[in-house]
Length: 518
Image (tube, rainbow, N blue to C red; front, side, top):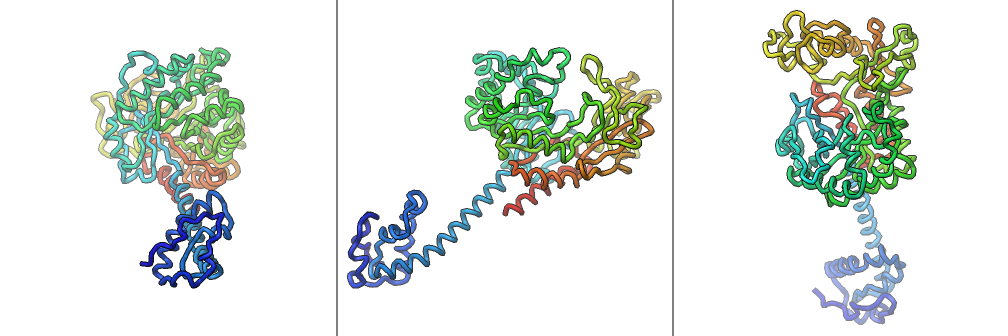
């Protein structure tokens, strides 16, 4: 190997006479030329990319013996351009790979649907698993009570890829009091954040999801605690997240946020930027868009409604790369008014009153999960229940005269025998939701404009709304891709265990996005 040229350390602002005189240094062999060029090229990357020097100055910074200025310039320009093209393609490839890797797939796992939770054979692509829920009130004390996960975290981890981040969600529907107390002042926020951080460390969680439904009001208790009594939460919510961010260090902080515009009380153009800066992911609950507070039928999670929700968040400054579009693994049903025109106009027809005066559920609406326990035909070897348990999992039916509730218990009160009663496993005094759902599956219709599946059961005055794999595919194309969102999320893994068709549709959507970006 030839020795290092004497002008190796020349400044780019100087001229080196040897560079212009081909007789000073002996010619380099091809191998030597490549050796020196590789060194010079790396040395000059800073000039090219940081200082943005011209090609002329770049050449003047290189000293290759045995070559005239013109020959050096020509050779290096030709080879350099090829290498630069290679580097550009490599950089673009890395950026694309980074973009694909950043496509979040967050999955909630709730404690009430665990009988058929799958393992890694079904959970490919899920990179955030969120165990739900820890009670919000647990973290307000100087000596907080211990949180006990419904499944050991190490067991839950085995259901997913080793790279999947395991998180815990705090709160959930109807659990807001602990958040209100924890967010009220600086001392309470600091205490809450420290307790959450300690809990994550104790159980080995990679992060936390704050599921406050909702800061500023419109929660389950909206009749007991009017929104005007929660106005301060509009200001304290961002401060609460900021305190958590400070204490959590490199742990993940995500939030679950409302899908309905009327629940955006704390999510405004003024408050939005204060919220987004503290969190890593925003799980948009773009489902339950029609609920028991409405008075006309519509899709609960339609394509158009979901798109409208995402646009609302973008309008208040949310970073699209932090947004995860939400999907629901259940169908919703609503009782319509007996004298409504739902036969002719099933979308937009009048609903019955769906909640009591105190805001509680009156049993005239509900959800049906996509589990074997609720949608599969009953096992052939059903036995009579002797322990009060009934349903698909128990392989038992209730004794004569008793009803099997949607949660799988035998009884005789309205709680067991009315809405959600499982007619395959006992007596039902009211409507059989299971039978109505089977009709919906058989005769359901697609609303191409709204992007949802629906069915009106005229015999029982029930309106059904749900997502199909086809609608899920549309959401990936028309929302996730079009709006360049960071990812998707679903509620919840244990609710799609009949045939996993919704989970599989989302996995296909993730792969499709990866292929299009690759």
